Length: 428
Ligand code: CMC
Image (cartoon, rainbow, N blue to C red):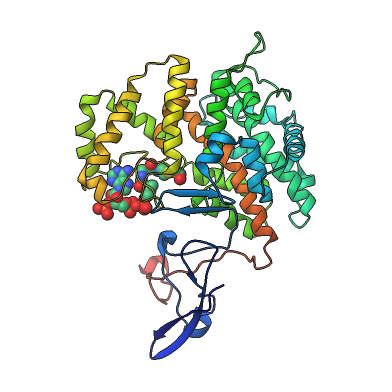
C-alpha cells in the first residue's frame, strides 16, 4: 500500500486521503471517509474513475492491450492452456498440477446433469423465445432445485454451487438451443471434454452418433477461454452487487446473465454478425463507416471500441487467427469474413477511429467463427454467458470471502423536485 496522501480542499477545509497501490496498475485514492469528512459524495456515472473493489483475479492495461488472469497473459492461456485449466486458475489462484486438473475436471463433469424436472420448465417457454431469456429464467430457477448449495456463509456450499454453475451451464445452453429447434434434449456424456460434451449436446441427435471435430472443439475451447473473465465489467459488477446483499449464487449469476444480454456488452457479438450480414459486400463498407462517424446517426460499428481497451483488444488477435483456422477446416467460404477483414482495415486507417482509439474487440470475429460452426446468432451471447460464468463465480467467491465486503449502496446527485405539499386530484 502506498504512503502518499491525496489532499482535497472543499469549502475551505482540507482533508487527506490515503493513496493505495496495487501490484500493478494505477494507484487509487481511498475516499471511504470522504462523506464523513466533507459531507460530499463523488460523482462518477459509468464508473470511469472508480475502483469498486480490491481483486487478485484479472488485470487489464487498456492502453497497452494487456489482459492477465492471475498474472498469465491471455494469449498464452488461449494458445497453450484449456478452458478447464483456466477455470481452475481463476477460481483457485494458481495453475493446477496434472492430478489437481484431472480431479477438478472430473468434479465438474459429475455435475453436468440437470434436475429432470427442469426439462418441464423449458417447455413453459415459447419455442421462439430468445435463448438468453430462457437462460436467465433457468439459471434463476436453479436455486429452487439446488437449495443445498445456497448458504453463502458456508465455503463448502459456495464451492459446490460454483462447480454446479460451471458444469450445468453447457447443459442449460444446449437445451435452450434444442428447445428452439424442436429437437430432443441430449443428455451429457462425461467421457467427453467440457467443450466436446457441449458440442455434442448442441449438435448431436439421438438417432446418430456424434463425432466431435477436434478443430472445432479446440476453437470453441479457445472462445470459452477468451471470454472466461474480464475484471469488473458491467455483468461482473452486477454479480458482485447482487451478491453483496447476500443473495444466493444462482440468483446472482442470473442477474449477471441479464446484464450481459445488452448490445453494448455481451450482446455485441450477435449485433456484430448481424451488422456484417447487413453490410453484405465489401463495396458497401464506406456507407457504414460514414454512418458510424455521423453524430446524428445512432449507428455504431459493432465489435469496435471498448471502455477499457484503447489499443487492440488482445482477445481479438487470437480470435482472428482462430476464425481463419475454423473457416479453413470447415471449408466455409463466407463473404462476411471478407467484409470483416476489409472493414477492420478501413476502420484502423480512418482518422475518426484512430483518434478515438477504436479497435476491434473480442466480439468482432467471434460471431464469424460461431456462425461457421453452425450456431444461430441468438446463441452467441449464450455462449459468452456460459464461458463468463467461470469469471462470475470466481469474482463472487472472492467478494464473499473478503472481510471488507459490505452491501453495495451507491449514492446519487439528486436534481429532482424538492419538498412540496401533496395537492388532492380535484384541486390540480
Ligand atoms: N462506432 C462508432 N463510434 C464509436 C464506437 C463505435 N463502435 N464506439 C465508440 N464510438 C465513439 C463514440 O460515439 C464517442 O464519440 P464522441 O466522443 O465523439 O462522442 C467515442 O467513440 C467514445 O465512445 P463512448 O461511448 O463514450 O465510449 P464508452 O467507453 O462508453 O463505450 C462501448 C464503449 C464498448 C460501449 C462502445 O465502444 C460501443 O458501443 N461499441 C460497440 C459495441 C461493442 O462492440 N461492445 C462490445 C464490447 S467488448 C465485449 C464486452 O466486454 O462485453
